[in-house]
Image 1 (cartoon, rainbow, N blue to C red):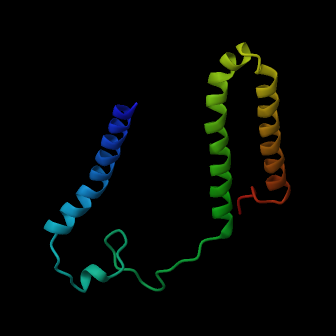
Image 2 (image 1 turned 30 degrees about the vertical axis):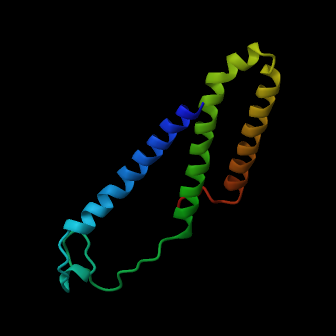
Image 3 (image 1 turned 135 degrees about the vertical axis):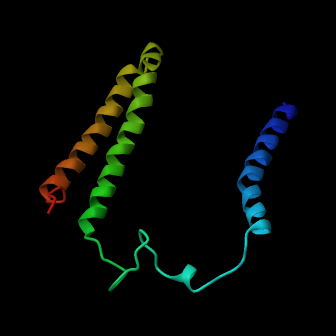
Length: 123
């Protein structure tokens, strides 16, 4: 049992080394010369004119959040579909099916609410 924990510790050490190693390496060998040009706002090689901080409409963020919510739905739906047959053979088929129907109904209600409140209208 204890040797199994050794593999976990080795994997944890390797993960930390791969994450921290490049940061330490860059800190040691990166050039440290700063200039005024490096601190300027830069976009597509053209100097900006006017205000560089542009406000975006809140509707873009709502679209992004709705996309993430329905993208997560597919992330939950695929493993459920893969394991459903095995769970049905164990006698949990109806229970798992009802749970997924409840989940999909909750998502449908959320979509209906977003649609009714006008959040899906692109203006």
